[in-house]
Length: 207
Image (tube, rainbow, N blue to C red; front, side):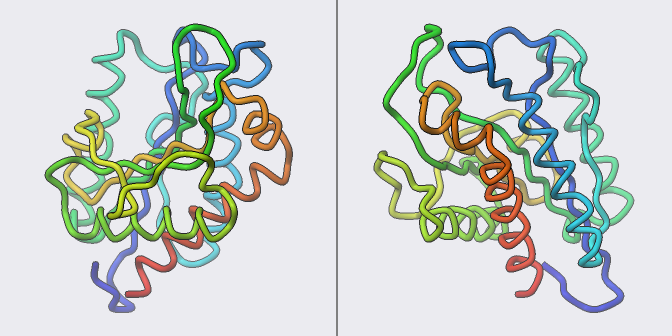
C-alpha cells in the first residue's frame, strides 16, 4: 500500500444486499441487514473523507439489481472501474455485512465479529483483515466463537474473488442473536462498528 502524500488513497465501501433480497433480517423482522450496513456506511464515509481518503459506495440504494448474480457482477464491475482509474494498488474494498448462524428464522447462540478474505488474496487484504479482527477483539466484539490463528477467515465470496484491489468482507455480529441485535440496533452499536472500520483503514494506509 503506497503512502506518498501525492498517492491517492481510495476506499470503496460495499453495502449489504438490499431491501428486496429475501431474508437478511432478525427472526422478529425488526433488524434489517441492508439498513444497518447503509447506516454504518453513512457514518463512516464522511469520517474517512475528513482524513483525506477518496471514498466510493458500490450500491447505496436500498434496492439492488436482481437476480443475485447480476448484483454481484455489477458490484465487481463498479469496483474494478475505480481500480482502473486510480490504480488497484491505491484502492481497497470493504464490504460491510451482518452474520447469521442459520436460515431457519430462529434465534441462535452464535455471536461476534468475523472478517473474510479470498483464499487467494493479497498480503494487503490479509493485513487489513487481521487488523480489523484484532481491533474487534480488543473492543469486546469477539463473541463466543473460536477465532482462526490468522485472525481472519477465508472464503471465495464473489466480491472478494473478482475485485482487482485488496478486499475484505466484514460480518459484524449476528442478526439472529438477540444480544447482538440489541447492540447493533443501538446508536452505540453502530458507532462501534463505524469506528472499528475507520481505525482499521487508517492503520492500513499509515503503514
